Length: 405
Image (cartoon, rainbow, N blue to C red; front, side, top):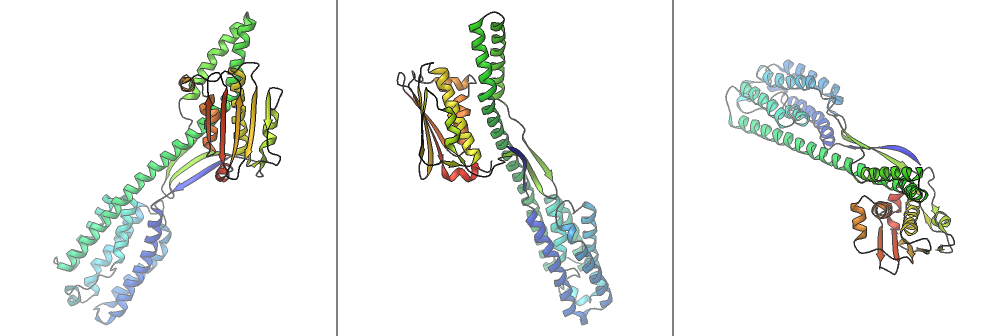
C-alpha cells in the first residue's frame, strides 16, 4: 500500500472573481460606447479620450489582479478606486454642464461598480461600505447637488455592495466550518484504521504475553503483568483522541484547503476473496465458498478478510480451545456476504457494550468499523449456549468507493 496526499480545495468566492473579471471588461466597453455615441456633446472630448485610454489600458492590464483574492492586494484596490473616482470628478471638465444637470452618465459610468465590488469580495461588507461611500461622495461632488437619480444610484450601489460583502463573509465562514468537518472526519477514519491495525497485532500479542506469563510464573509472570499494563494503556489511547491526519489551511488564492493522507493500493486489479480467506481454514475452521472467484477491489477484500480474522480471533479467545468455526462465503448479485459461526458458549447479553466501554474494541472497530468503511454492515447474533454468528455484508455498489480509499 502506498500513501498519497489528497488535497481538497474549496473556494465559494472564486466564481465571484471570475464574474468580476468579465464585468470589468464589459463595463469598460460600455463606457467607451456611451462616449462614442455622444461625442459631439462633449465640451472637451480630448479629456474624455485621454481618460478612456487610461481606463482601457488599466482594465486589460490588471485582469490577472482580479483573478483571485491573493492577487487583488490593498494597494491595487486603492489604485483601482482612484481611477474610478478620478473619472467621476473629471466628468464636469469633459462633459457639457447641461448633460450633467439632466443626469448624464459619468465618464466611468457603471465601471465604477466593479471597483466597489472588488472591495466587497476582498474584504467583506466593511470594505464595501468604505468604497461605496467614497464613490457616493464623488458623485455628489460631480453633480454639485443631490439630484434624485444620483441619490438613487448611490444608494443602490451602496446597498448592493454591502450585501455582497456580507454574503461573502458568511460564505467564507461556512467554508471554514465545512473544511473543519472534513478534517475531523478524515482524522476519525484514520484513528479507527490505526486502532483496528493495533488491535489485530500489538494488542493481541500483549494479551498473549500476559496469559502465557501468568501460566509460566516466575520472571515471566512479571513480564506478563507489565504486558497487561501496557495493553490497558494502549487500549485507552486507541479508544480516545484524534489523529491529526489532515490539515485545514487558508489560502487567499484558493480558499480553504483540506489535505488528508490516503492509502491507495499498488495493485488496481480485483482480488479473489477466496484466496484471502483460504489461510483461515484448518481442522477447527471449515471454509465453504463458491466454485467461482469472488472478485473485490484490493482494499475491500483486505478489510473484509481482516474482519473475518478478527471474528475468528474472538472465537479462539472466548469460545474455548475445542470450539469449531465455520466460514460461509456467498456471492449475491448485489452484495457479498461472509458468515462466521461457532459452536461456543455464546455471548452474554450486554457483554459487547460492556467490552466497548472497557476499551476492548475488537467487535466495534476490527469488525463493525471495517464494514462501515466499506459501506456494509456487520451483525452479531449470539444466544448463550448456542454459539455466535457474525454476518458481514458488503454491497457491490460500494466497491468503487472502497477501491479509492
